[in-house]
Image (cartoon, rainbow, N blue to C red; front, side, top):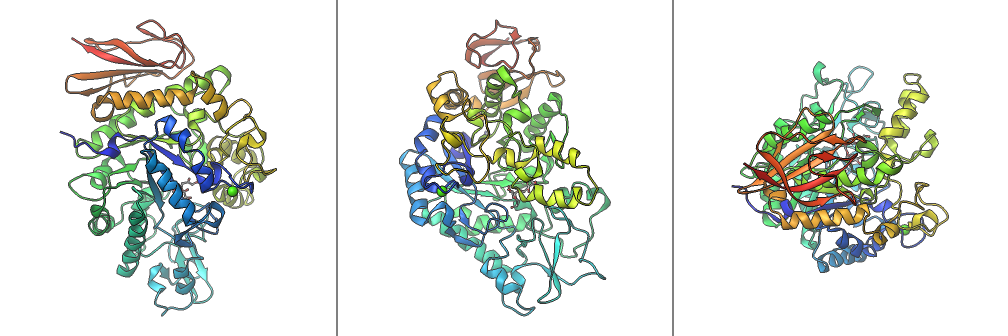
Length: 553
Ligand code: ISL
Ligand code: CA
């Protein structure tokens, strides 16, 4: 039997602070802005907020490059604002998890400033330094933001490793002192009362100390090489023993490069590592290295079955299809054109909130916010886009039109445009003339004020789904079974716990379809649908989603 835990029952909402709500008119979202929106989150049915990095940072990668792990980013406010956020959430019965970015720091972190000074500096081994090979870097590892993962530092003539930007040097987890520092900074935030961590690219912290070139099978998708290094499980068990086990907290690892088969070792409750991870298979279905890849429903469904089987009763999954690193939910997995946007966004909400695992809602998806109509490279802010443009387009390797077509479907900036709060200028995000990243021009139609006023809105559908989850334990703890894995349009599944089973029916297309269920399974009472007038039993209208009691005989 599965153990009951608050974080299994929770609905999590991700806030990207730069883009959530500006309170002081500088065009940048901030913590007081978040505090002013806590009732909005409570009304949505949120239990836990995950805050993307709020730490002091020079913002080479919007806060994923941390200069001081114990300081709040000045643009976001100060520690008093952070404390007010935590208190405001707790007062409303919600919890807060923060981002832990410890595969790398900023090159402006005091440790790195010291580390690069000399080969015998006491902080030298906080980072990963190697001499070059011939005239070049130590090996063929590549940065996820284009180019080599090694940068030559003139001060000592050695290269430092950075799997991300050159301003994000990788920390050296082989060093006991570094690990002790990380555990210390974790305690700092836990002692303040935060309820856990989302851990950035955590499977990449352990590196093969031979630093070999990529094995041929991992040259394309290098994340499958960098994840799960030789000492990963040892480090995570140590972190759990030293820190996590002493608090009642939740942890979710960003498991870029971890397969469903490798997942249980990270989240098995007997092993004492993490509670859950983000598996990337679903969210990356349409995104093949910045190129759009058409995906099919049977592929998506197969991923959920594979995760169910891979994780089993002693592990736990997450459910998410968007975040600050991916394009918008409704534009990627639904249909954001005209009349289909609202029903398809509600269908996706229904799926996220009824699959087996803790659901993560990304800010703005509860409004059905869409991809931004980017047309030129200058409109993008993301370092991933800007570096790839230089590395691929300016060198003639990729045609500009192809690059832009790919980014128009996959760029991270689609999800980073500001929240659309109202029909006021800049969507009510800021009173500044200009937000740090342009607001989507569809804000007069798509905004929170309109959603709150409309009982049929996507926002209110999420709230009803959160209520349904709370009322029906099978939606949290029940097994998942896909009833029609090969069907190209229908996703039909049951969630069963003991004698109680629910049936979820989703039509991933504009066409009306017949629901073909296996013998012995029937739709019972309708608990929640996404259309004002649900279709008759046995049918689903275009993008219709329904949750029924399940009758079996
Ligand atoms: O989005 C990507 C590249 O455009 C991914 O490769 C992404 O970098 C990867 O999923 C790791 O993401 C996390 O770490 C990065 C940071 O840029 C992302 O925002 C973060 O979620 C480096 O800290
Ligand atoms: Ca601000």
